[in-house]
Image (tube, rainbow, N blue to C red; front, top):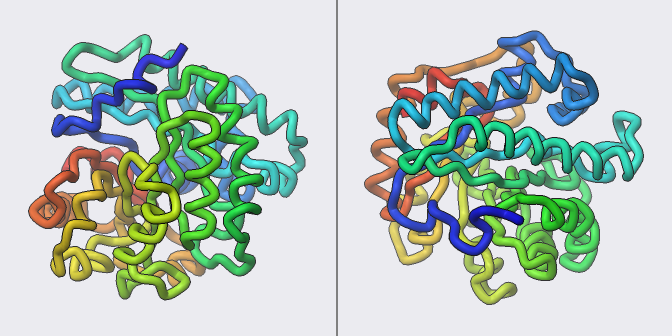
Length: 307
């Protein structure tokens, strides 16, 4: 039975952290090979499992140190049918990995949670296609069908909620939300934007949030922005409006480079931790409900500590 599914503590104004750029940390700082950027592949053996435990423990300890909450995002951004098949896993294998990923987070919560540091388990899901360039777009029905497999698996575990990361277009977001509604799971949609602050499809962030809310009767519990640098989207937020109240979480990139530049980069651009922390402070003034802070590509625990 899930602990917080019916009463998510981050819906208050208490400060929460989440982790940084897991995949870039594992690849560039720890030397792991992640096929198709799929960190769940590390769950296949004891060595990888222990590496993930160490990764999560570092952030759990940081949360304890600062007495803030912690959103435990599972290592399952790529753990869906199509991505699993690309690296040789069957649907049954992928389901097992999703379950194991949640079990790992339960162990972390059992070890580190305190009254001052509530820890919420989130089943992380990613886009069906490329997280930067949605070359093949699904309609809402196709997206609901595709993502229902992973979401249904999470619903059968002690997962408290699901979070869709690096969402690039609204039809997929709507499908994800509808699949979560059917599974009776709280759901968060985190969009990614380009250097102009718009989704890769050219749609504005404001319009994307409004479109998903309209199609799902405001079903997402909140929205986020991830895999973009604050300088890419802060000017959009400065325009203000009620829609900004729907954004509660930011997981920014360390680098100011575009998605295309990051795709071509052979070395890690981990930015300036102190500068990124200051930029998050400014985001807090633009987003009145922002209370969940983490990182994405290029960020590690040093940057989240500054944030």
